[in-house]
Image (cartoon, rainbow, N blue to C red; front, side, top):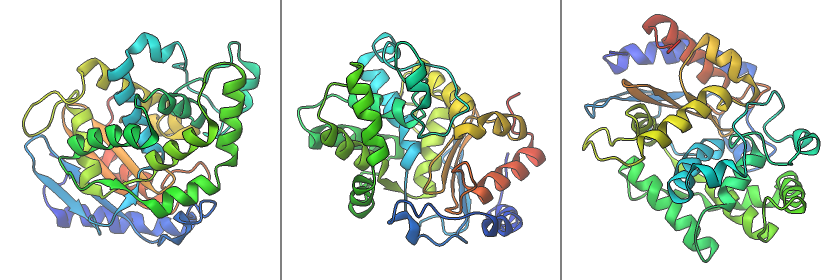
Length: 309
């Protein structure tokens, strides 16, 4: 069992905190630039329902790119694998998460995978509903089931800040519209995607979602199948190959668990069959990953042999 006490886990947090000085918060989204770069917290959720934590684990943060895993699971449940992967690929990329380069050189011009922005926008485009509000509410209800917390919603300030600074994502959508991959209004999709990325929770919530994926889509307490096991498998595979942006290969070698990061500083980890991990550390490295959060996972993976490889 990983870290039986919060005191034990807190020692790992303190050892990792010095790394926060080597990164910076994501100030290109103004609302995210307000975060304290010294923050670092972690929660570990076991299938028994037991949760061990350290740091300010009740502090809320937005999911950002972690939401890409959740929306992918949701759309796969709605649309099926053939529909989804006809429009977005399954291959990792060495390019930054917001790059347009591969779209210009691929034929057909579909995004390489659902974890880069172009692919995530295509996935969000697939969410069923007659309005942005209905589509968002369907996704939120799914997230509330995964966290077992009906209070989970999105942060309006962050969503607005993202919407106002999303010109690169707008460019991606226009490019994908030109090639027939997306066929909805650009501003409508940017609005929905900004709100999706701004879904807000704490480390405890995030660790519980990680535990659902770790348990092949089953609720860790009730055993109810919240996500089909095959969908969970697909999502975890993408987390391994593409989940940590263009640092995913190094992460797989050094830490070796399915994980997804977001530029808010969140990391969701799923150790298959064992537990879920939720981390918040808003100081980021040059790839957009929580710099102290990765260090924390490195220490834990080494000491507790977490790697699945």
